Length: 493
Ligand code: AHR
Image (cartoon, rainbow, N blue to C red; front, side, top):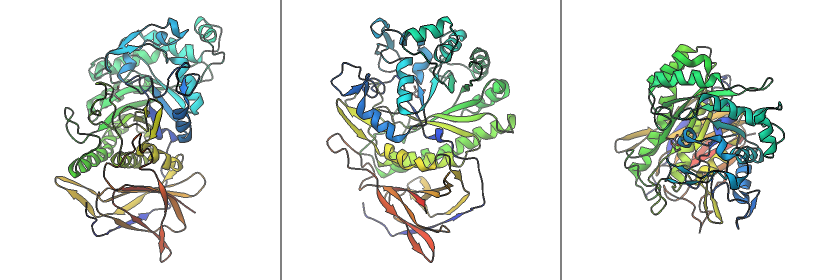
C-alpha cells in the first residue's frame, strides 16, 4: 500500500474544563464459560503439564497481572442464565457435568466455579463482577449465591463456604441481575424484564456494612425501548444498567475474517466501532430524562470485535485472531468512554482470553499477547484521570461509502497532575501531523505495523508490540507525527 502525503490536523485542549474522572473500571474485562476462555485460557487444573498455580496457568496469570485489570465480569454472557452456582462449589470430583448449550454443546464439568473465580480475581487484584441467573433460577438463588460469597454470620451457606475452603467472606462489589434478558437470557420483552429486575434485585442483599452494585441487564445495541422501560419502571431498584455492543465489519451472518481483509473492511470496522458514541449518547439521553441527577450508571459490560471464527477452530468457541485493526477499535472505544464519564462507569471488553477480541491467545503451552492487550496496557495512565475538552480539527479519511475522521484524540489530566494523551490515526495509508496547544515533553509508546492485519502468531509472538515514541516541539508547542494506522499514548512532563 503506497504511503500518501502527510495530512495536517490540529488539537486544542481546554485546560480549564473538568469532567468526572475516568473510572478504572472502564478498562474492565469479561470472561465467560465459552470455548477456551476459562478452560485452557485461565484454568488448566492442578494436574496439567502446563505450569500452573492451583490450576491457574502461570503465563496467562502473570500477563493479566501486568495489565492490573480493574474488574472482571463472570461467568457469562449467555452462560450466566443457565448457570446454577451450586454446580461449581465443593469437591471438584463431585461437581456435576452439564452441557454448555450456548457454546458448542460441550461438557461443562464445573471445575472452575465460584471459589476459583473469586480466588483468581484476588490473584489478579481485580474486583469481581458476578452475573447472576435471572432467566432460569428462582429469585432467592441470586440472594443465596451472594450470601454464600459474602456472608459472615454462621449461616448454613457461609458455613458451606468455609467447609469448601474459604473462611473469610469475599467482597463482591458488582452483581449483574441477569444477562441479555431480551435474548439468550429469556427472550423477554422490555416491560417483563423491568418487572423481573425489580423482583430479583429485591432479594439481592449485601450484608450490613457492605454494598453491592446491582446491574440491570439492559439493551442490545440501539434497543432504546429497553432502556426506556428499565429506567421508567425499575430505576429505583438498580445502580447501573448495561448495554451490549459488538463491532463487526459485515453482517451478523457474514461478519468477515479477523485477518486477510481489505481496506473496505478496515474502514467498515472502525466506522462501526465509532458508533459506540452515538449509542452511548442516545441511551444516556433516555437515562437523563428519568434520572437527571445521574445516580444510575451505564455499564457497557460487553463490547469488542466479533469476526468469523478462525477456520478450523471449534464451532461455537468464538476464537478469532487479533490484529492492528483491533488495536484501533480498542483505542477508539476507550476514547469514546472518556467522553462519557458522567454515566459510563464500567465497560468490559469481550473477552479476556481466547474468545472474540481477546487480550491473550493460547495454544497448548504457548501464549501470545495481542495488539488489544498492548493498547489496554498503554491506556493504563488514563485510569482515574480527568478528561479535558479537546477540539480536534481533522481531515476526513474516506474509503468508498465510509467517511471517518483521520485522527481521534483523547486528553486527560492524571491523578499525578501529568497530562496523558492518546492519538489514533485511522487511515491505513495516510500519515498525519497533529499540531497542538500542549507544552512540555511528551513520551510514551506507539503501536503500528506494516499491514492492516499485522498480528502475532505462536511462531512469531512479537511481530507487533509497542515501541517508544516521543513528540516533537515546534515553537514551544507539541507536534505529533502519526504514521498511518497507528495508536499513540504519551504522558507529558
Ligand atoms: O460474548 C459472547 C456473547 O455475546 C455473550 O455470551 C452474550 O451475552 C452476547 O450475546
